[in-house]
Length: 49
Image (cartoon, rainbow, N blue to C red; front, side, top):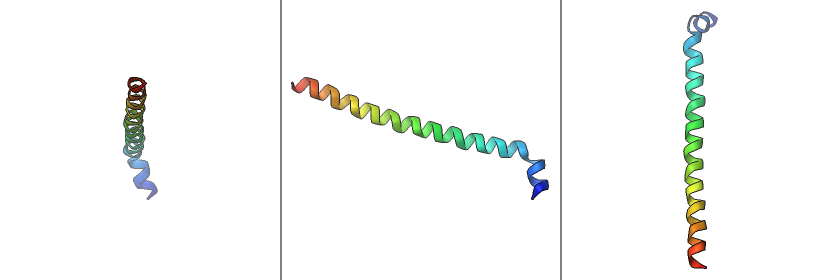
């Protein structure tokens, strides 16, 4: 197992970085959806008043 990790360490690092970037990207998408929902609610409230 140690031999595999030492021979393929760059691939292990690349996989970890890819997982982190995927998590950041999915978090940004969900945050954007929430912000759009709040903006829609705010503009809806202004038009009703």
